[in-house]
Length: 115
Image (cartoon, rainbow, N blue to C red; front, side, top):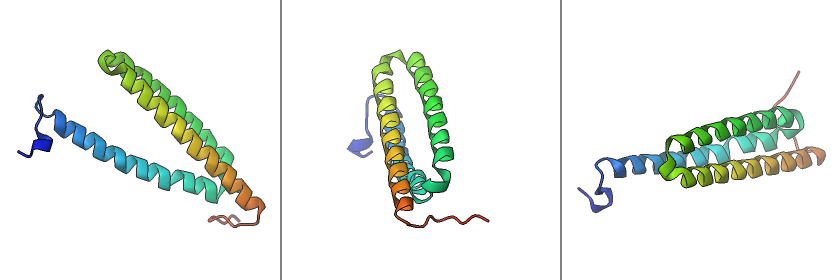
C-alpha cells in the first residue's frame, strides 16, 4: 500500500481522503454557482437568494451544534471549521449581492429575462 494511505486506524486515511476530495468539489461548486447567480441577477433575485443563504446558515449552525455535541473530542475543530465556512459564505454572498446591484445600476444586464 502507498505510504500516503497507510495509517494507524484502519480506514481512517481513506475516510480523510474522501472528505478532503469531497470538500474541494463542494468549495468549487459553492464558489462558482450560487454567488455567481446572485451577482448576475441581483437586481431581481438578491432578496430571495439572500433569504435562502440565511436559512442555510441557520441549518448549518444547528448541524454544527449537533456534530459538536455528538463528537466532544473534535468539538473545537468542528465549531471553528463550521464558523469559518459560515463566515466565508456570508462574505461571498454579500460581495456578490453588492457587485450585482452595482452592475445593475451601471446598466449591465442579468442572465434572466422575465415576461
